[in-house]
Length: 450
Image (cartoon, rainbow, N blue to C red; front, side):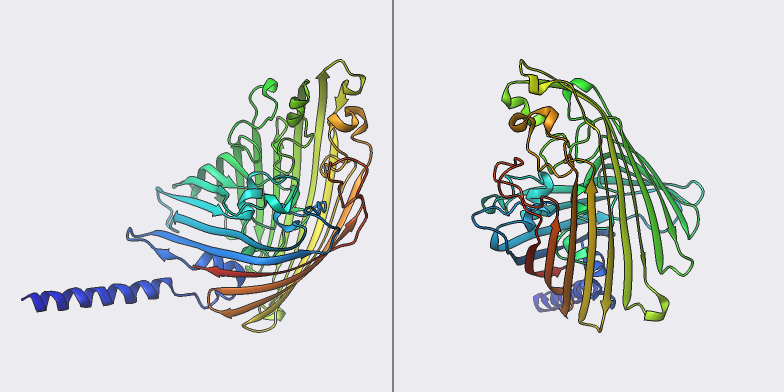
């Protein structure tokens, strides 16, 4: 009897392992980077709940200056470490119970967690002035945590309630899902995440609309960074158009914030004034933000799904006023008005099953130094002298991708940045190691997805 029981248990174990391996096997289209990340998963014991993620590591080298800091304007924090640096970009884990395609009342959830150097800079994109010593791979970042709900209204009205990633921008926080290893100029000035409610409704196969109310960019609290300004919110809206053949998408995204949004590139808002309270003065602030983003991609039919073309465009404006209370003539009333704008073009060609080549070219500009923060703080140069010059940044990136085996991606990349004042001095002021470039980057990345 014991032998029979053991034989039955062994057979069940073998069947379970075989089923698990089949469920977690890669899809035939997993050689595409984005599908590698999204379509590979491990299904948990509870039916419908899937565990997925990736491990992303690499090596980067910045051919700029000396010492521990490069501070190249426009580059994401973990892409700026001086000279040679091994990187643990991220360990990403996502747990999800997605909504089904049925138009009925139902609910699900999604939780995304990142650990690594990218997580450190998503929390604070300034993160110690981009020093080599501040690339903390032990940082933990909660990217998303929301409940999803479908109301059986019309074609189905979906809601996300909780924390979710930004609807703006072509590039996403998951490096392996982007065409290039490094993050682009436009990504580094886009909102990262929100906390609130986002609804979406698909009118038909070609048109989808989104509408949401949130606390504001990159904040678990209200949208304003000034405690004297009261409660604030941000309104999100989007209209996505899909071509009849499904090979082209055009996305239009809009954000309006009633207060000064949190911007993790400065550790505070775009004016950097919140951190200046330590200098012994206080301020009152009244401002609103408007951001419009349009992006699209197209996979031409004649290229047999080997060619992907895309664009990304951004227009942002902040308007308001700022005043200080301190016995210093440099800290009088001032404006918090700025306009920033940019555009990017992307192309990727899949030569065969294992090799691809992708390129990206971007421009980012502003009518003053607000977005770039390279004119120093009010504490160092005075409030009325800080918004004195505009900046223009450019970058070009070339990335080679190698799908060696299923679930394993290797990429090599070369990047060049140039423009107005792309280097910042170690103190962040307007003098010192300022340069128009070019600044060169070379790196390699290894990604395993599951």
